[in-house]
Amino acid sequence: MKLLVCTSLLLCSMVLLVECYSTGAPEGTCNTLAPNPIKHEAGLQTIQSPYVLDIETFTDGKGGYHYEPGKTYRLTLLGVDQHPFKGFFVEARAMTANGKTAAAGKFSVIPGDSVSRLSSCSVPTDGITHKSAVEKVAVTFEWTAPKPGVGSIPFEFSVVQVKKIYWAHQMTALIKQKPSAISASVQSLSVDKMTLLQAIIAKLLTRN
Image 1 (cartoon, rainbow, N blue to C red):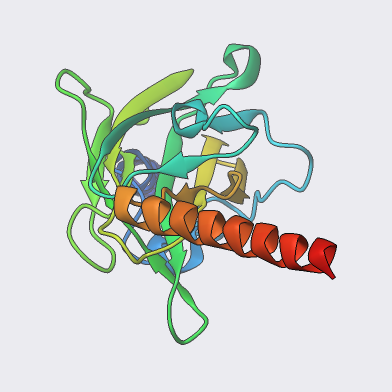
Image 2: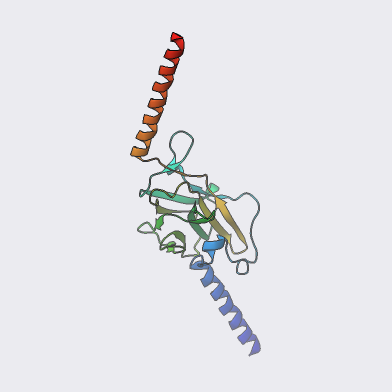
């Protein structure tokens, strides 16, 4: 009888752990961007991660990355060489006035996606995580860029391969805010004025 009770309790505990794991990252992950070390048995990896967040959609063709405020982009988190994973959490982070970082922009789940759900950290839908522990080799979602003035952002993400193996605080390259058309025109005008001024000075010097 005692053995039966102990076995039942063990099975219940395993179910609870799987449930905590399979329904996505808890709210506390917003601050740490790391899975719970107790539930994941301190399995933080320090070797190179086999997972990447593809940000080529932001490429400017000049070796850099830019986003346009208010525009929606499609991103993919994937395992290199189709390396499988079970859990994930992604946020975009921006520098605040007090020198700290805060979530930026809003995520959305693509219709038909049965493995992802939205997370709310600072504001609703500013993060995205898994809702199913089923193995996956890639997950695609959408991110809508924040309003003008937020500045440059990287995406930070964590990936759980299995319960005892995970990577946290992974970061993409910095993505800068694309200058507005007005700002670009002002910058161009300033350059033109400077060029004209330099030409006038050069002409005056030649006369002397």
